[in-house]
Length: 120
Image (spheres, rainbow, N blue to C red):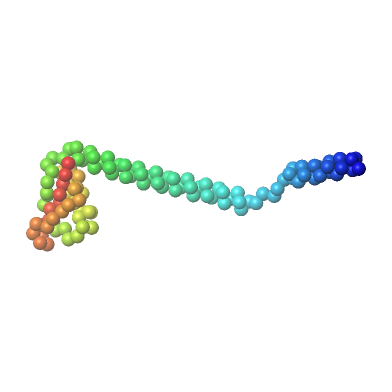
């Protein structure tokens, strides 16, 4: 009886280890999917790095302009009809004075003259 148990135990061990030793078939789609996700992740990182670098450059330019501001205050320009137009137009007006735009603007003469607020 003991001999039978030892033999059956040996066969069970052989069967157990032989199943683990067999090579599992490799699915090529899984390998490709992993590579594609790694590529996508690296592309996302590159995009965010570029965006962060661009934001940092804009911030550095604003700080540099603010250090050399000739005369902060309101500068007259052509007519500004909306906040969206002011956001496009006023930073350039203030940059010519080596200032940063404060985010404020006002209409001096309706549909003729507006002023952009520039700060150090």
